[in-house]
Length: 447
Image 1: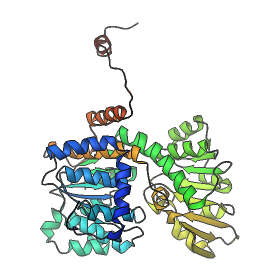
Image 2: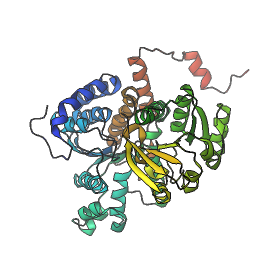
Image 3: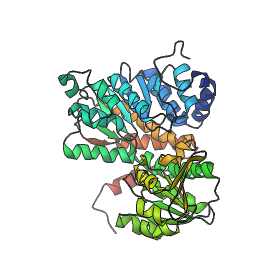
Image 4: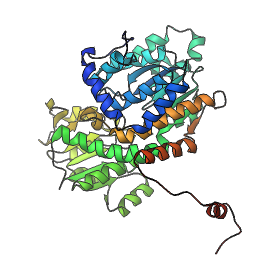
């Protein structure tokens, strides 16, 4: 337990007791991360390391933060989404575990970027991102493109000399990125030659996106929709925009609850896969006319646009489970609507269209699984955060050897996490015999 609260900006430290219970409850279902934390406590692989993490501040994330601190890291944690913070968890991390946290559920844009500035001011050696907001800010500052950052970040950056701004990322050993959206942004930086630090694409680890993105997003998204609306999924036409791993998970869970699932896609391979998985596939312009519930999971901008809102029927519900709310063209919707009632129900805003049709946007278009629910279950985050912690350790062991590019998580790390998870589930698997190993490594034996 912490004796003196570190620097922080959270809703209320009096919430810490409830948050502490929630953190420990999640920890019961995160045995892989607990095992790593025990080793980190003994070996201190992160000793002396300054870390800044821009993540969803949930009970599961709290256990990652505990693991990083146990390994010796000096950690600052900020929110990666204005609606994803669990305020009691944030309070407990400060009060009970002595970790600096800057995160408040529902924080406005100014507060959000003030917290980004606080994470940058920590002068981290390693960063963690959910969406690349932290690294993006560092890159803009390093390029001296201060007009491209929020005024709160710009204000901090102007306290640095031009030389200090140019070197703002130079002490960063590596950054861990945990989202599809973030990896897309970072690969774009690499392609444009502006990436100034090594990045580990934790999102692309098999123990992350096969399970977290598919089963975690699938279950928690439907959970968020039901908590916000109390709607019955059975019999509803559920339009899932995007058939990546997140989309597959959402579609699978919606169908499992009796939903008539429609997939929209721009990728012919994924569209074909969705069709052969038994889903109806059509353009969003056609789906807009028939859908009861719309869920975007693409990582792209304006997937559902003005013309699609105009075509929707009365009572249609729209939400997003991709990282940013830009997947929905909400500014256009607000301009077209003749009446808007914010908070007509918790996490639900009503937009009345010129036709008289009422459309309902859930969670302000932000991540519905975190805005209205608790996010991914701890059991699946156990693997994702284990990969985060081990990728951090791996990057430190390879300090000075990594180029300014996006790296995959090493296969050995991925397989270690999977094997440890299987052990905690009481599942054993086979090993290759010497004969089988020789056969697989030989070209001389055939039919």
